[in-house]
Image (cartoon, rainbow, N blue to C red):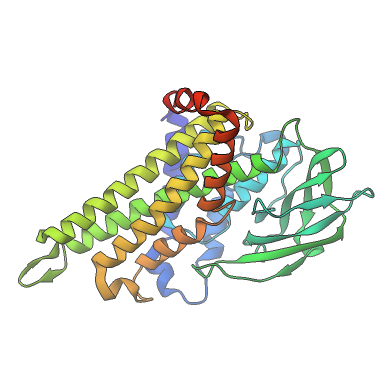
Length: 355
């Protein structure tokens, strides 16, 4: 990790530690913690990490931004940091300046489409858009007769139907009815909705991997504190076996997510087979780990882990919710299978072995 990357991550972790402590947030029923956290993040320039300085951002590298997202996953923060970073990154592809405040991206599912009409307006519907109700602006990837375009839209110009994911975070349906964008530019050559979904998938993979790290830490700590039959439950073979499996799932998710992040940081050509393989494999493996790891963590904790008072659910439910954003593991497994089938068996092993 480069020195500048270390500094960025340390700054993020310090802010999260001071203002996003899981236990403090869990006891705060009215969400008073959100405003101070967002203010601190904004002052540090983290929400616009991936936006060049001449477009109003911090100009951090892709690798530095990914490191911030891993830290955000470890704290399971419930503010649109990842979404604003991703929106800023999307706008930057078309050299559109990013406004201040919370943002999100649309579409957030590979099956939804936003259309650019002949008069320059946008139409369509995007489901499962994270934090749309909290966003002031939405970065949109639209399809038109001349290819893909990137637009900046005021959230108030759309119709937003509020929804919630498993973690009770906003996951909304955004409808565009001939919405006039604030800015509109053609997307770079070769940039399409698959590219956005792959980038979003890696973002979620890093967050899931971070959440699993915290779930492992919480579970190990609890097993060393909880006493049953006059000894710590960490001494029981069944518990040790479960913790070992949880550690394995966490390590696999972290390895897959960081490998995909490293690939994207060094090669932003989304039409490259290696980029597709890394990003898709990370989303699939991290989604599987979220399901298996979350179940193990709750099993180790027993009944107490299912209570609303315990912090474990802040991590497990978000990890499970992030599985579906920007394409579920089942969707990407099918797409990966299609690509492998098209390329043929002779090309599969050299590609896998090269990673």
